[in-house]
Amino acid sequence: MARLVASVVLGLTLALPAQAALDIGERAPDFTTSAARAGMLFRYSLAEALRKGPVVLYFFPAAFSEGCSVEAHEFANAMPQFEALGATVVGVSGDDIDTLSKFSVQACQNRFPVASDPTQSIMKAFDAVMRTRPEYANRVSYVIAPSGAIVFHYMSLNPTRHVEKTLGALKGLPAAPK
Image (tube, rainbow, N blue to C red):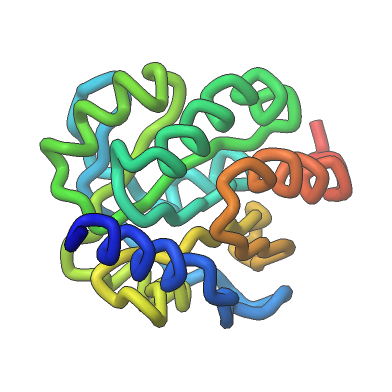
């Protein structure tokens, strides 16, 4: 019975509307942190990633939770589309780097990095802390132009629309000069 009550409370908490995100046109806060791709650890730098093109930065509550695994799987499957648009993708959560190393292999299918933010400094800078459960990141995605400007954000606890929405935003960006 206690498990049922806890599940209902968690479900209702996660169903509350999400609020806040950085504004379109605002400069994305720069960060460097530990990340993993294909189980390999490295230092991820937003500034370095932006030198290569636009970045889709998405925050997710917890590795290996059902919704976060679904979302990571969808991003992994869409990586050829993101790459065709010159974009890179990185996921960020408060999980420790060892957990994210495993998640980068299993849910992310070795196709994009996930970064660890155990102090929540990145989450706070991007206004991505879940208000109702502040120990978790909110499910929010940003598209950041190579200039560092935020050109799109989408916030929804539903994990299935973030890929579609961020791809749509990227398609609306002017093509990079060749």
